[in-house]
Image (tube, rainbow, N blue to C red; front, side, top):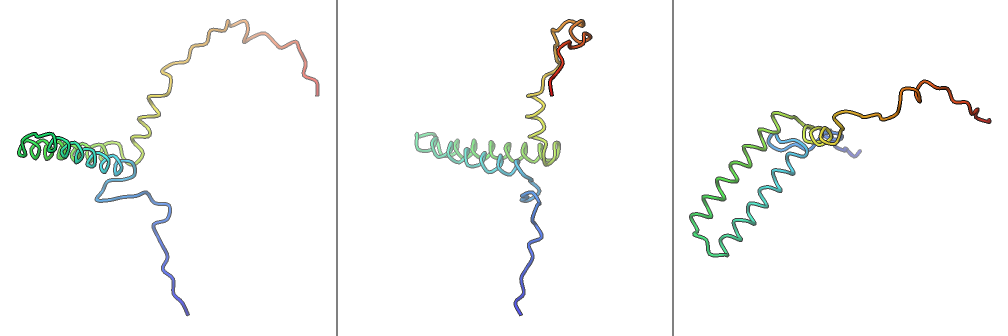
Length: 110
């Protein structure tokens, strides 16, 4: 009889070394962007040691900030922050109070 292994990770978020969900994509995209920037600087003729120092410092800063955001806001924190920016701070209603209190004289026909 055949034996099949059950995948118990169904429905879970992607996680790598503690980074969850969208932070993992920010981390990978940021490192890829930094690698491309360092390669462009090197091909443009910038000093090799300067390229290495800038690349190492900026990647260290990226790693530190990504893990800090992951620890502070959690798995869905970036989406919540983005949604909070799109919500209005207050709602303005320019209708007069009389329009809210009056009854509708037109009856709906069924």
